[in-house]
Amino acid sequence: MIKQNDIVKLHHFLGSLKPDDTVARGENYWLLIGETGVVVSIENEKALIRFDCDVRSFGLHCHNPIANTLWISLDDIEKI
Image 1 (tube, one colour):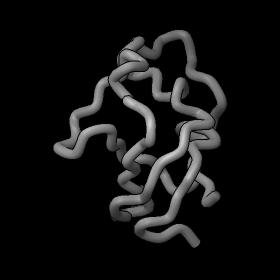
Image 2 (spheres, rainbow, N blue to C red):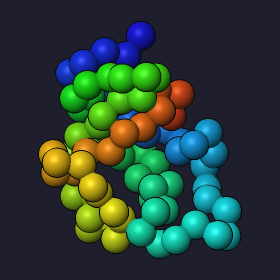
Image 3 (cartoon, rainbow, N blue to C red):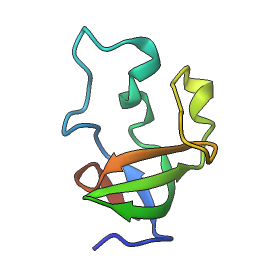
Image 4 (cartoon, rainbow, N blue to C red):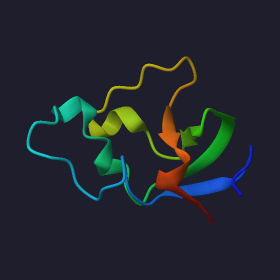
């Protein structure tokens, strides 16, 4: 079971390993597959992950108030 402060790795995004052709560059979060981070909080089967990498350096949108954090489905991450 994944909990707050666990170190995790993104092993897929939205249940798949690659996006379809309609995904905009700034929303291609599949680029983060394999990246690690720390669980900041968990709500409604999603975890707020603070990634170790600079999410914006991938050209991705990151709208959360905490830098380099994204809400990710618990099904898309694994504890390491």
